[in-house]
Amino acid sequence: MQKGALRWGYLIYLGFYFLPPLLQQQTNGWHWAAMLLALAVFLLIFHRIGSAQLHERWWLLAGMVLTASAITPLNSGSMSMFAYVGFFIGFWCSNQRYALGMLVLLSWQAALFWWFYPSVWLQGYAVVVVLGVSVSGLVEQMRLNHQLQQHRSDEELQQMARQLERERIARDLHDLLGHSLATIAWKAELTEVWLDREQPAAARAQLAELQQLARQSLQLVRETISGYRQQGLEVLVPTLFSQLRSNGWICHLDADLRVLAADSPPDIELVITELCTNVLKHSKGRELWLSAHGDGALWQLRLQDDGQCQAITPGHGLTGIQERLQLLGGAFCWQLAPTCFTLTWPQHSPQSLQLAASKAEHQVAAHDPKNDFIQGVA
Image 1 (cartoon, rainbow, N blue to C red):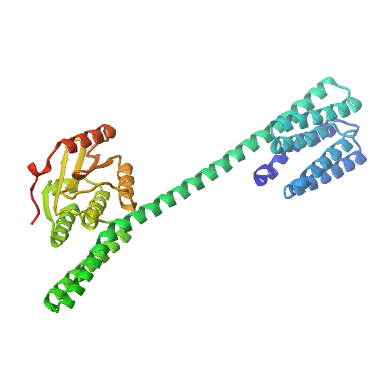
Image 2: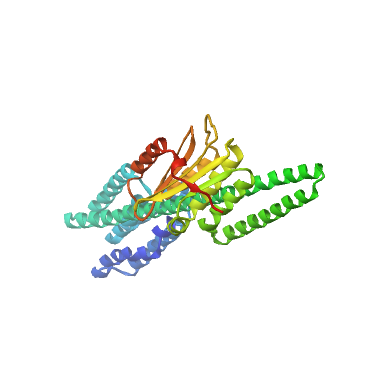
């Protein structure tokens, strides 16, 4: 704040200091020498006050008042020095302290000027000059405080953006690698079982699938790092269904993946991956239905299985899904008996998402997906 307040350009107000001696014919050399000496002392204090500590400022300001008071008998232009005192009072003080400080300063200046220059016009002129410059100090204080507040707000926004980016990366890593690592661990255990049973052909088949899955996971990580590029629902859903079928699941699909992929944000791919991971890890069922339909305003996607689930405790995965849908302007809900997850998000233009989510819950409760689904993806 000090740099903005103490620019040397403010010394333009010292023009008032030279007006009286220039207009008076009786000013002699000694008067000029005294006035220049007082001006040098004032400039020294002005320079020093810019780098002074808080407890030193008021002593320097008192020195500025003494300098202005000492030269007042020779030059009524000392009002310009008093004006700088008023500027710093306005710049440093709050409203109450500013009013008290200016009252003391103006009273002292009025007493000096009335003693040496008993003129009502000069008194009024001096008050206007000092008050005007002090108000500029108040304005400078408010301007710099606003800049500081704006700077802090920008820093808070940047910090918030960094935090959101970290959370997004954490969700992406969990959604991308959670399913793959769970499958890799399961296939590694299955390979160990085949080796214990002395069936190397089956073990080699599992190792080949494990190797392919590891390569796919590595490719996903590379794509994520290079720009969070996803492989597309047309490829992702059949891949997920293939992995589910390899674990004994029967999968059904009722969706036009080409249309859905063209009108869905990349986060939906991560959400579907996370939901299929949860089915593979936690569900005790053996049959799964996935449907997606749009009404021109909203997409609605349902994932249901025939597993029996008594309760769902949201973890990082479900919490991440909910956050993603909220950022998309959508909604996420689930129900038990049967277990069904429902997603809604804008298709072309945002609609009343709360109404859409309520409608989705009602339709899920009243709908039997086995009557509508088409046998899965080959």
